Length: 284
Ligand code: PAF
Image (cartoon, rainbow, N blue to C red; front, side, top):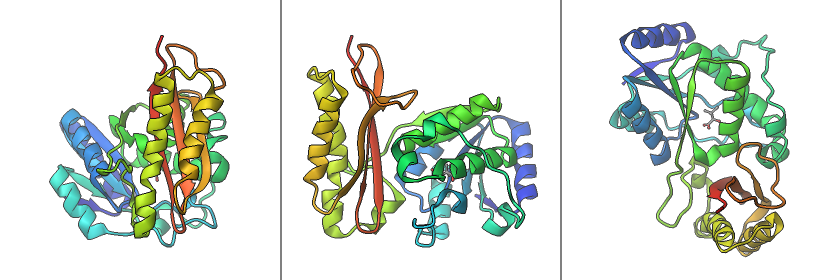
């Protein structure tokens, strides 16, 4: 697998890959796990070449967040990417990626007001900005994003639509540990007890789906179930547990038959904030 650090060199390499056929792109922040590998494998099935970027984007971290602690595991990442079948890895350094006079950002408004946007002000502007810049440097046919960051997926898809970017977005399923915990680079920050407790996140979402399946039609009824499960998880402090429309991300008051809703939750542990979600179809 070829590793490129320069911006112009990456752009040139992607253009020459594209001459040979379609390019799938998987943007990441490194500390790769099986969830990322599944994105690369999917991209490989659907494209001639796969490009992966590894860049811990300072713009999407708040002043009190874990930028400095964010894990860097480049050697292991390269191995995983080689095995998954990536062709090219773009690993820019922060000072080259953002020149000292960098001053342009992209803001997606409505979709970023709730859920993670509420507790992480500026986060999605950092995400939209870096992804737009990455798409300029890595002109791809298809962009692969994981469902674990569902709000991020909606924000990026909206930006792509609003700005008429010629790229297709593919949303890929969450990969889970045997106890249901969604894979995340941040799981490494959990203590042993917290790791056990963290399975409650997925259980809360299963509870939500179960409540809807058995006929709950009030959003508040469903979120109460989620909150009670998360409230019982040792060491977890609730950030949010919500039921929102899967497209607009607006809170759902009454569940309408035929619609798809998103149950989403975030909890804080001592050194990590974890998120998870589940798409739920409402029966007609
Ligand atoms: O999901 C991530 O790892 C990041 O938010 C992304 C999309 C690579 C942008 O930095």
